[in-house]
Image 1: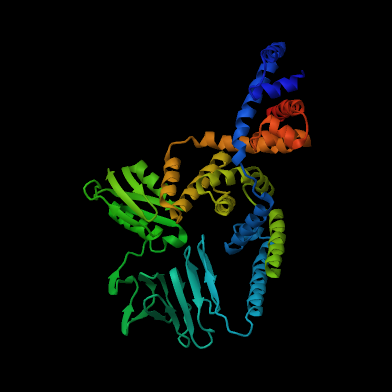
Image 2: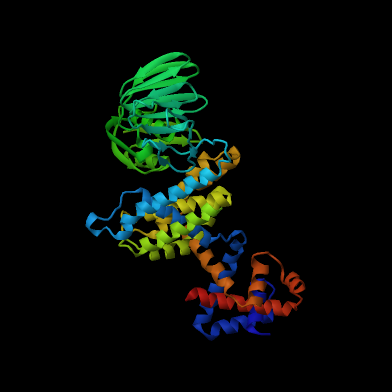
Amino acid sequence: MSLENILGRFFSSQASKEELQQLDDWKNEAEDNIEALNEMNEIWEKSNDLKNYEKFDTNKAWLKVNSAIVSEELKLPSKSTSSSKTIIRRLLPYAASIAILISAFWAYNNMDNTPKLEEYSSSEKVLELNLADKSKIVLDKESSLTVQSDFKNKRTVKANGRVFFDVSSDPSRPFVVNTHHGSIKVVGTSFTVLTTQDKTEVFLLEGQINFTHENKLISLLPSDALVIENGELIKYRFDAKNINSWRSNRLVFKDVYVTEVFKSLEDHFLIDIVLDKKNVNSNCRISSTFDNLSLTDILSEIDILYDLNFELTESKLKIKKLSC
Amino acid sequence: MVFIKLKLILTNFLAQITTKGALRGIDKITFQSIFEQYYNPLCNFALGYLSDHSKAEDVVQDVFVKFWMKRDVIEADNNVKSYLFQSTKNRALEILRRNKLDQGMKEVKLAEANKTTDLDQLSNDYMLKEKLIASVRQLPPKCQQVFSLAKLNGLTYVEIAEEMEISVKTVENQMGRALRLLREKLSK
């Protein structure tokens, strides 16, 4: 009986007394043999876990990641200093416009003569767009924007989800944003719209907009916010500090009350936050900058600062206790 | 399709030329080798939370894109392995929370994740599995087949003997051989 046969039988617990004796003899032959047997035992045990271990297509994934990286880098301002700017770096923006041209051509070819509206939508990531009139649009995760006119005489779009607008000024071509509840007419300004089936909110940062809802016209000035929910329309002033945090993924708090912090988190992560008034000390203040962090990361940072107890479900965060 | 292909060719071309450009921190080649080393174990790790192949892959791909964008910020002495596993876990849990899958199932998974499992141990475990499976693939064909049938498919020696039309003795022999070869490969 060869040693390999004995090993095969030993690990499947089928070895006879004589075979075990033979294995023992072999073990005592050299110190390395004991170690080898232990290691083989580990391999035997560990490979039981391999049943559910899957093989993903690493090559295909690399191509995807690599192209994502390249397009991210195209979007970002070049990191290198201007002096070290290579020819390639200077050429990259042109390459990007070629890509856009190709995609425009593609869209054109797919039109089949029936005018098809352009639609932009984002899924897992925030998406930045530049429209034909140089207006800048930023779509939050899982939001969309439909262009509803040719932009020649008027500019009409439909928003869904959370969308930031920086509209280029052009009095001859008014810019109209249709929401789930009413429409917004602007000339040149920047604002954020959050619109779902249930609720529409508008936050104006600069300029002026006219909001039309059920034949009522409401004018908004900078730092004015408007919310329509359950058929009710409320206009109020908002704190502009963290209103764009979802775009920069950066939340800044300078000595503010925790209640205010949670309000910002509520807006930023689009989650309902409920405070247990009895056990949350609303006099606690927080100074911190959260850069690119997930909600759980932020909560664990707050937990380091203060004693925090919470419960997080899909759409709701319950703050059970906070003391400082 | 043509457009997608064109875009792919274009981006790959651009990727190649940017690699040659001056990049601080780790270079693209190093990044790619890290990617190749960690992608599969990380996907398996994420799959544990998400039970959905494409979601698991999306999570890991996002983690790598972020890793590349932040490569200048991530400190040199920061452990790449723990960074990648921690980010994958965070991202996977974030997706899991947003997921509209069965509530009961979700709670079980979240509770599991919240248990203070030692991430370091867990990541070592996944890396070992990856190494192990790579070594299994390098075994001689017969040896590999016997080992896979026994350990991956859970067949008994007698069943393997029937399946491969060889004697049980040969199965035992190949099994012992597989273990010795794997041990040699892994202890290197």
